[in-house]
Amino acid sequence: MRPLARGASLPEIQRYVAEMEAERGFDGLDLTTQCLKLGEEVGELFRAVRRLLGYPQDPAAGVAHAAEEAADALILLASIANRCGIDLETAFRGKEARNESRTWS
Image 1 (spheres, helix red, strand yellow):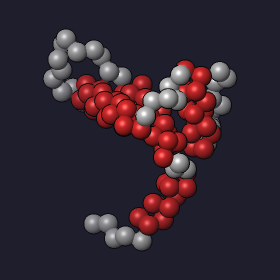
Image 2 (image 1 turned 90 degrees about the horizontal axis):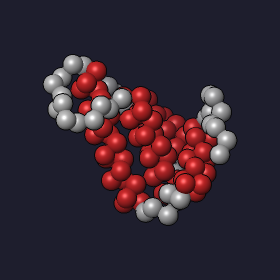
Image 3 (image 1 turned 180 degrees about the vertical axis):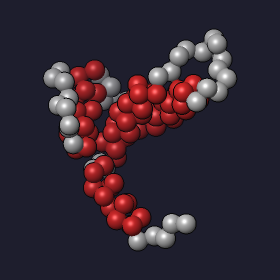
């Protein structure tokens, strides 16, 4: 599989994830499985953030790296969006447009 181009757009990332999943045989995994995997990856990201902040860690646990865990979470988010027919860029822009009209304190 060709590498993702540097500076790829969000739609390009979604397409890449779809192609990557097909190539690796992950495209048959159902939505529930992908959602559960996203939850696991977010937990690993939180553990990595705790490590960065110097919180106590279980010495028996594997070392989590924030950048890798954030990337895993993005991959799974794109995977879930693909299965739900969500264009993440359109969804992001629409949500931010609504957020702009809100009052934040």
